[in-house]
Length: 197
Image 1 (cartoon, rainbow, N blue to C red):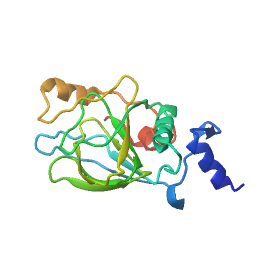
Image 2 (cartoon, one colour):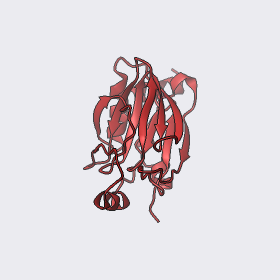
Image 3 (cartoon, rainbow, N blue to C red):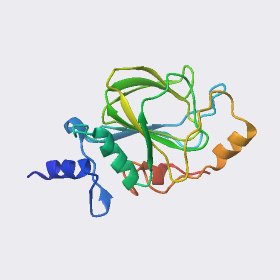
Image 4 (cartoon, rainbow, N blue to C red):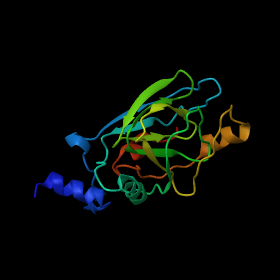
């Protein structure tokens, strides 16, 4: 059996080798990451210190229950999954948790950063990490679009659709995050690129 196929099978089962999470490659394409910082956009605070991270082709979605593949990956890396659904079709952000979204089915176009900000196309196998305060909404999606949402331990989500209160701004400035990346564990972008200061 080829090593690449073996690793893909392990990842689909949520297993790892040598203490590192093994990631399946969707469509034979290596995982690549994109990241960008956002500034305040009207009533949407965004997060000006922690970048949005987009992981392309992070997982295979060929399993019978591809959502569970994402849930296993997030759980293994210290980001407990909390729901399966989609993305709301209105601008909103969260102040009670950093959010990782695993796209386990279909495709969609999202608006990241609030009104008239950045359009991002996502497809099954992609993962997007949104630091708390980051505006997001679904612009359009096909009927197969499905998402797993996960958060760091002891964090959850609130749905904020207006300018943050002073208490919410204080929470955004001090909200902790784990030392592990939700996709790549201890070796991913979060430990290297997420820090206050």
